[in-house]
Image (tube, rainbow, N blue to C red; front, top):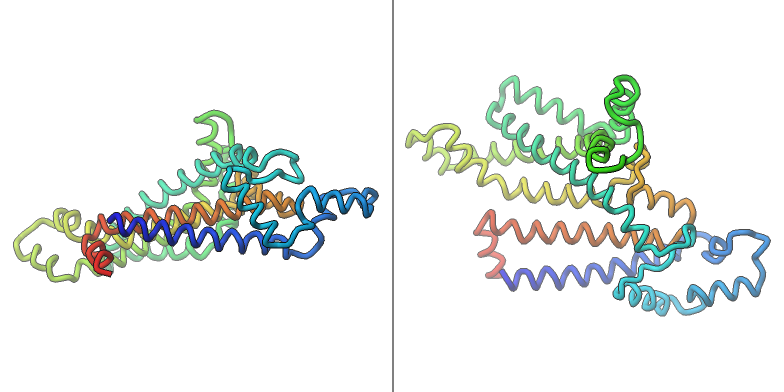
Length: 317
């Protein structure tokens, strides 16, 4: 297990280093001169001002030197300064990140609990009416873009019924939960359908295996067979898919936060792209890569605990 952890950490560090370089180069390879956006007012664009700005932000240095200085700052906790907000990027992220994490946490609880429950119900009633309704409903939900779902939820539950606020993230614990309920539902629906299908498929496959048939022949009850043999052995693929879905959510709240007017990291990314705030865009993209990598690494470490055969194969390799 320790060797597996070291390999995962080594791969994570290497991937993060490569990703950070790609992010840095891609931002500065974007159309337009960064100096123009940094200076702002066209009337202030003079040769002296251009030279001063280039020196201040190290834009007069070679690309690899710029990257080295940026990476060195990140390793020391310095993500740079926002051109638009004129404050440290770390302060911006620390003020926006709790909202995004709360939203993703609520959505995760919804798609895990409801998705697994629907998948189990669908597998147990395979070929029946409940299976058809669940499969059809989840397929339809998964085919609808989440921004369309978000607009529909706002129209019905916020504008017409007035059960929830239209926009904003709320203040205090209760207020934040109430404001983020509709965004969490909109964010979770597509993932709920995916988890439901994966749970159903893995459980259907497990039900046909020899050890399950042997348990039935011994007279073991249906619920005992489902909990001890079918569902338990189906957890590996389900947990893996839940982890990948969670990782994608951490990097994909942009649309939902924009629709509901939530001041989270996703909304900050949109604002920073529109204002050409390169330092903030770089930091957010790096956060998204890091969040995805951390979650997927945790899934890789948890999976062998669910299936010991995976750990044995990893140690042999």
